[in-house]
Amino acid sequence: MRTFLISAVCIICSISLSAQMGIQTDTEITVNFKIKNLGINVKGNFLEINISSYIDLDNLDNNYINANIKVNSINTGNNKRDEHLLKEDFFDADKYEEIGFKSANIEKLPDNSFSLTGNLTIKNTTKLISIPLEIDEAKNGLTITSNFEMNRRDFDIGGRSWILSDIVKVEVIYNKQIIKGD
Figure 1 (spheres, rainbow, N blue to C red):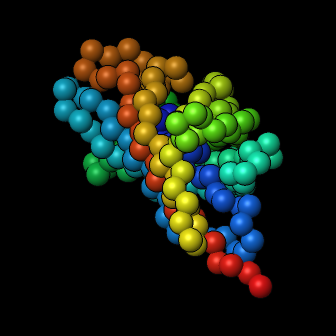
Figure 2: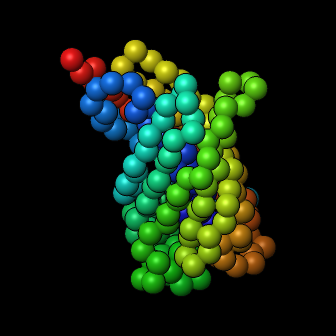
């Protein structure tokens, strides 16, 4: 569940501003998730995320964001819970080591925010999803933020539960620094 939302967030955060000239470096990628369990918010994140991206805000036609998250890098601050989330009934990490996202489209919305659409794969299920993005440009780079909700059961994570919410809240923050070239 959490992984599903986190991967979507990771994908969103993986956008970079490649249209500017210069060397680009990832300075921070954070993928956080939150889900209610017994009415209490359980928070976590993923620690290993690989992203390739290109963003030209003036011409969105050739933009892409692709991401892979190592499932076994899940961290909720509780080792026993993390081990359980890696089991077959949740992420089945022995069989499905990564969560993947491959972008299809990014579009600018009338309110100057963006929408990222792409294929999210968790376990053996791929679904086309759309994720909201806020992109803040700065002199030396950009910050991309996304906050969204996902249904863990869409990817067969955790099955039916009276105590665990179906909805996972995801927050992704991605900072990209651009060092101007000569």
